[in-house]
Image (cartoon, rainbow, N blue to C red; front, side, top):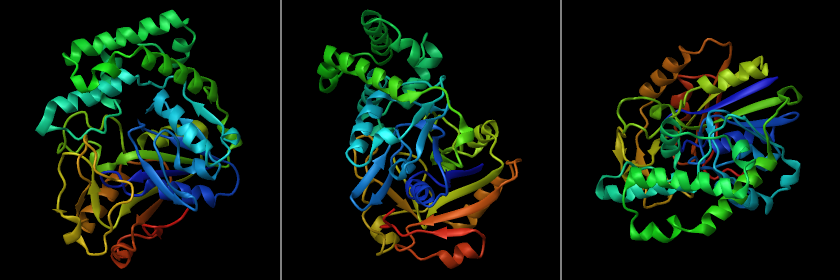
Length: 366
């Protein structure tokens, strides 16, 4: 069984969605797309014949028929799952896509998400650059309160489901204090709780918690974020509360019995990042290169502000890859996948440092 581990080599936004979709499209046999880490804060975009699509809760290989598996290290978001499922159903036959989940997956509520947004809102000019999907708040809630699994929640009667969610709501009211006027009506909406319970049942019914990995020919692990967000000491605590390396994927690959492992480090030809934090060589996009286009999916938002750009130091990039490689004990093949090559031609520079190089244009239709 072949495994491909797709890793962002920088701060995220390297083009992992395009890489995953490309390998899925050209795979021989049945593909399982594993969402390895993080949660629905990811935004992996692909360009297709029928326009752009951004994956958050599903793998980018879904567009080409890959089944999905949410690993134990992935945080479920029933609201985003239901929304994205509906959007995908308008493009592909979702009845043909099988969905699996680890029974131990943590799951976010609307109150985790809104608490995340309210905390950022209250920071005003000192935002951390969170994307507002509640990942860190979910993790803290699991550490500080009594929680139950998704299956256990869906097994409760409606009265007890509402009681559980109101207890989550009360926990956050104690944690964050006053609810700002902008959030007050939604925060206190009974309709929100009713809708969310429906979304939980929808996810539970469509995502099985038992999987037989041996029936797949290829497993594609789709990491979120990137190596420079793993634990550099240069960012705000809690902004990337998961491993962004190959560690989780390799652990699952071993459990699945994969014996042919390819690790793919993905990068643009330049650096990008969202939110606040360290970015070496930061430059205005126009000064970085006249050919670097306005990004088609990474737009301004009130939580993360503007998309940021910088020079990619290839010596530091290579050092980062080799340091990561030195930690990996399982036999594997190293690959470098470089995106946005039409915006800045640095292929010859990469070839001096790496074999097994694959290149992609920014506007590649996959």
